[in-house]
Image 1: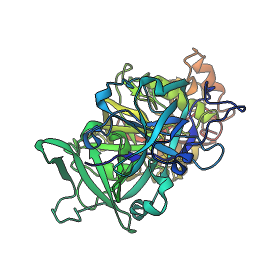
Image 2: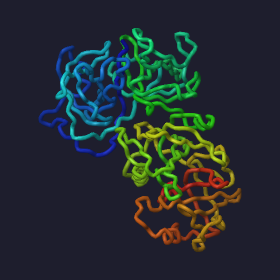
Image 3: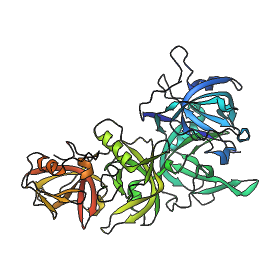
Image 4: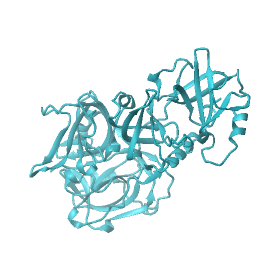
Length: 487
């Protein structure tokens, strides 16, 4: 029987919840890491945050457990897998990733991976909500097999990066289907291998995690992947278990090089907030890697549902609100995973159209990307999707409703101007929803006439935004209505 991985990541405070029932200063609970000092059969009660949903790994472990990790506020973070026998019929389906829980269990093991076993519903209690999201701990691929010398890594959420490898056992494939030996029709999952140059690491994609490599043509030897997952022990060997498609991603530049119609998985931080272009009926957002390279996530419906960190529905407008909070320093960068189909626009740009339910907030160690500075006339098709900065002289504006003498024209969804530093002109688009992200009904005409203050045709203007191709021309879409994005 295959065994189960555990999860370990770094911690991010998602929302400031007060955690009820997490122990008190008079009677503190032991950290999860104390489990490794106990003997099989010992009982312990610990608090932690859910990192793997119940039943995610059932196809290989034949049980319906889940995993938790603590916040490491008093030392090194600990993680453990909670083993649950399906014959008990316990229902933990209400648990979500990030929930704070208290678990009373018996120290045991699952094919030599240390676990806590619970045998009644009362062994698991919800601590007044959730709140913590953990960043995965980045490891070299060679470190996975070295876990025997660092057993505290077991059950943590880890991050691997590297090219896919051919099956080291010689099947000639980079994706190897694993079936139940007693029932070959029953597919348990798929083995895939990564190697960042330090050594090969095995990963296993579970059927019960709703993973299926078939739709992804890019899963061939040599393809660079980023994979997050639970570090699992299986006897004397170790492997990483992704928890779903949201744990697997191709780089944005590599995605942009796929053929239109291809299905892809990407992750990054949002630049242009969700629903910033809502007035022209585009409710998507731009997604970027740390180097600023990016892609537009095209959503045409205001009712499209995004999944939050727990996997619960939220709107693209809510996603945009989080982006706005980040822009004023009240929220960390908004990290998102997207699954969808690639579409080539009439201007030759590549955008991704997400599947229903294919947009989800994730924890991932990505900082907000810096902008790349360009001359106004040097922006080419290869630069589209980036976060870019440029400066130039405000020109006579492109067609649209004239707005005073400050070089802006009123167009559908916002205002447009044109800049030229002498190398050639570039359009700049300022969305209404960037000026007024809360939809307060501000006087947009007055805003644009008076802001930026004192900048008229013939004077200098600097902007930072998302590069796109629109209506036959390249343009920069301003990301935020604040100093540093338009001056």
